[in-house]
Image 1: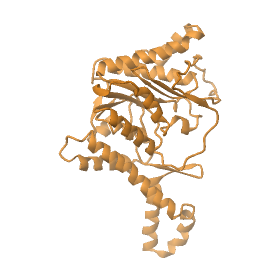
Image 2: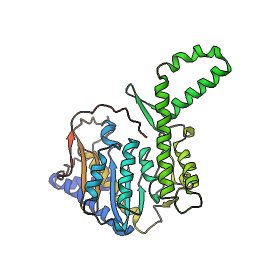
Image 3: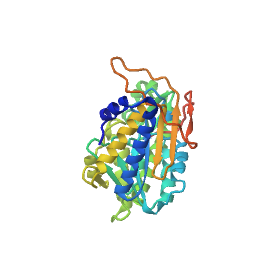
Length: 344
C-alpha cells in the first residue's frame, strides 16, 4: 500500500508527462481491485475539500449536478452484483442526496458504503441509505442536522428552533424578558423558524425512510429503529456540525458497520491506496470533485482557482491532470450564486 509520501517520491522520479497517467491509472487499478475483493461493482465519489479549502463549497460539496456523474459512471453497468460505494465528502444539499440515493436504489438491490476517512453531513445521509458500512479506525460520519444559508452565513436549523423555543419558554415565564429577546429574534423572523423546522423534519424523515427500507429492513421494528437512529444523527446534542461519529459510536446506535481492517483480505490496503492516489490528484490538478467506476466511467468537476501555498510548506510535485473524458464537466471560473437550500 503506497502512502502519500511514497507516491510523492515516485512522482518526483518520473518525467512530468508521465505523472498524470501514473496517478490516474493507479486509482483505476485500486478501484478495480476493490471490486474484485468485494465481488461487486465499485464507484468512488470523492471531493477535494481537504486539499482545496479555498474552493467554494458549491463546487466540492454534494449538489444536484452529481447525479450526472453517477449516470455517467453507471452507463452500461451490469447492476446485478450490487454496488460498493466509496465515499469521501464534506456533505452538501440534502435534496441532492435524496436524488442520488433514489437513483442508486433504482439500480442496485444491494449497496455497501466504504468510508476511508470522511463522509460527513449529507454524505452521512447517503452512507446510511446503504445495507452496511465499512469503516476503519480513522473513518468518521457526522451529524445530519441541516444548515440554513442566510446573509452568506450558515446557521444550524436546530439552533434556530432551539433559540425560539428557549425564548418562548423564558418570555412565558417572565413577559418582561420580551424586550431583551427582541433584538435577538428580530433578524430571524417567523418565516425562518418555519423553514428551520421543515428542514429538520425533511432530513430526519429521509434517513428514517432509508434505514427502515434497507439497513434495518430485516429487523423486528425497522420503522421504529429507523426513527431512533435518524433522530440520533440529526439531533442537536452533538454540539457541532463537524462532530466525529466513529464506527464505535455508530455501531452502538445499531448501524451495521464492518471493520475495514478485517472485513475482507486486502480490502484495507486497496481502499487506502485509492484514497492516496485521489489525494495526489486533488493536490496537483484542477479537479474539485471526481467520480470513477469499474466499468470505465469517469466524471470530473474541474475548477480553475488560484490556490495560495501555505507559508513554510513545500508544495507537492506537480502532476499534470489527465485529459478529462468527454463526460467530464467543464472547469468553472467563478463561484455561482449561493442557494437558499438547506445543506446537511
